[in-house]
Length: 296
Image 1 (cartoon, rainbow, N blue to C red):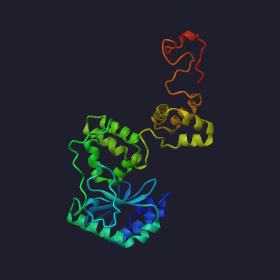
Image 2: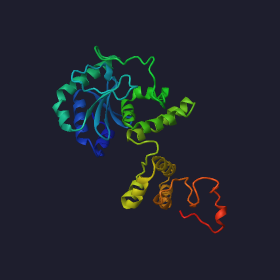
Image 3: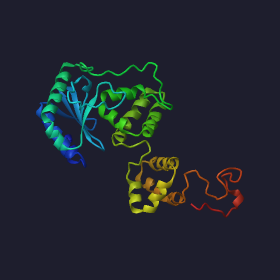
Image 4: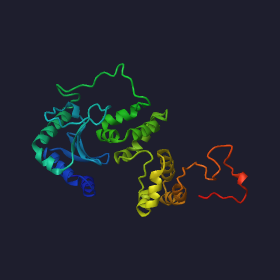
């Protein structure tokens, strides 16, 4: 039996609709039950999670909760990230591949369903095991993921795959945000709250409202000026724009700061023309007289 939420999910997809529809049909033909969990189509056997279907920018996936225990004679299973314990997925970019591999894919699904029903976990016989990390030197600036995030990855392979697909800078920003709190409950709340943003491939300060993108589409000069800013200045503006949950406030900020961005100035750059450093400019601009006004 199909789930109405999954029907709506597939109907509203802009990409990978055909491939995911084929995967759904294949999975249901194996006798699995369809559910809607974590905003994704999820399939179970005897009440146990077996697999999830997921959509990313560059592909869609058939993601197995206990994929490390599956035999992989074709070498299709991919480990989402370095901290994954059991999750594995198979990547697709077209429906033709799904149809071409249908019989082999059913074998993976049947084995995964049997393992889930029996409660079996762990690596399949002959599977490669991770090398010991003892004595390994972490790269400079490395931030260890908090325990709550590692646990989330173990339970949600789609989350881990999406996180692994982010650029190193975006990953680092999230890890800094997650680990900034000493309270486990706060860390868990942050990890849960930011899941949709990470699944969408967005960084901490990436615009997701669409208003800045719309402004750029209408004003190419604005877009070119913003692109010419240093990454640090861009980040400061994006943090300021996205700090508000109100569309009207975001639009006001985007419009108000246009002249400043066109001048190549950052959020905190001096605009009086004297100098960027003290004592030439102390920030008060009293030396310029009472009639002086900021140009932007």
